[in-house]
Image 1 (cartoon, rainbow, N blue to C red):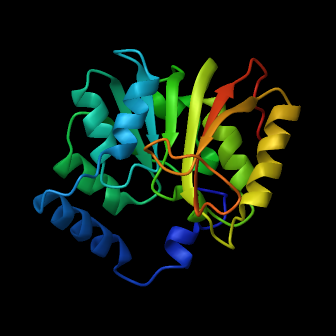
Image 2: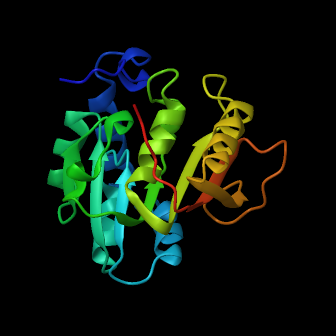
Length: 211
C-alpha cells in the first residue's frame, strides 16, 4: 500500500482520462505521426545494450523503441491502465506499476540503470511536493556516472525556478549535476523564455537517501 499522496495524474484530470490518453496515442501512431523523438535522444546517449528506464512510460512507445534498438528496456508508470496498454501495444520491455516517489531497484530486477529518461511531462503530474523526492529516486536507481534525463513543459504547478532549486539540492548532496539543457528533444537551445526543458543530469557517487 502506497504511503505517498496521490499524483496529479489522478487528482487533476477528468474521469476517463487514462483511456482517452491511450486512444489518443493509438490514433497518432496509426496516422503515422513521429512520436519517437525522446527515444532517439535516449539512444544517442547510451551505448548499445544499455539498461534504460522509461520513468513514467505511459503506453510504452519509447520503452519499446529502445528495446528494438538493442537496449535492456524497462518501463514504469503509476497508472495500471497505461501499463496494461503498454504490455499490449508495445511488448518487449519489462513493465511494472510504480509510483516514482517510491521507486527502488527492487522494481527493476535489482540492478542499476545506465540511463533513466523521464519524458512526457511526467514531472508536472507527480504528487504535489514530491518532485525532489522523485528526482532523488530517479538518481538512486542510476549507476554512478550514468545519466538521468528529465523533460517537461513550464507549468505553475512545478515552475522551472523550483525545479532548478531542487537540482541545486541534488548537486549540493553530490547526487547529480546538470550536464546539459535543451528546449526540445531535438537539441534546440534553452533560454529564459523556453516553454520546455530537457535536462541531462550526470549521476554522482553519493548515495541518494530518501526517507
